[in-house]
Image 1: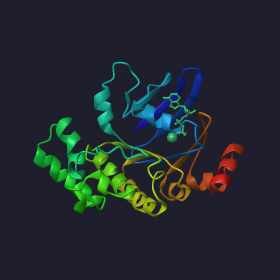
Image 2 (image 1 turned 135 degrees about the horizontal axis):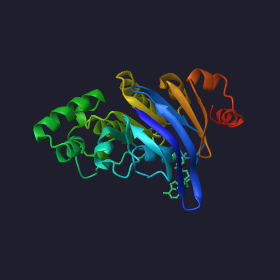
Image 3 (image 1 turned 90 degrees about the vertical axis):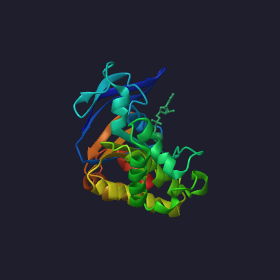
Length: 240
Ligand code: ADP
Ligand code: MG
């Protein structure tokens, strides 16, 4: 579903990604972990074309998205992204946060969009918040709305960039539960996270990134039990 081939990314003189290659299969859940500043967000942002790689190529469903002729709008629709800081539209109700893009971008009727939106709010446990404004929600609720808002576009792939890092501890679990449920539906997911237990339990594979390089790629069992690189060992000692 996703193929990343030798991508590099530089910001001016600073090379942030130094040749990363990997593949993510359909229905696979991959956790991307590594120290702060190692390039995890930049990698995700390259996959959904929020950043353009300096070199290398990325394929989604066999289609090269780094091709200058690629249809960026169409590709972005296939990929949902959830951020640390929710990015909800503050002046819209929860329901309108969900219906806005399907109506605008996909041309759904208001009633079709609302029907789908309500189903998704139900799924993330927020059916009763449809008419609330984001400012009235807790962090965990906001993030569940953000997930539902991505899902309403029916993406093939969901990218998560530290979705629980801005949450109070008591709200982390409700968001992780929603993500776990999504993983069980067969969604293809790439998740940047510091939640090691979640990664261990839910991910099919761990990518450990350090200083712009993919240092280890292994099953959770292997990675957490027997990390091979010195960098991963040090990292795990710090975070566990
Ligand atoms: P991570 O998500 O692993 O913490 P990032 O991908 O956010 O790391 O950042 C990796 C490096 O790239 C950092 O040194 C960061 O300062 C730098 N960086 C990220 N985005 C930009 C940008 N738009 N312009 C300049 N430097 C950037
Ligand atoms: Mg980041």
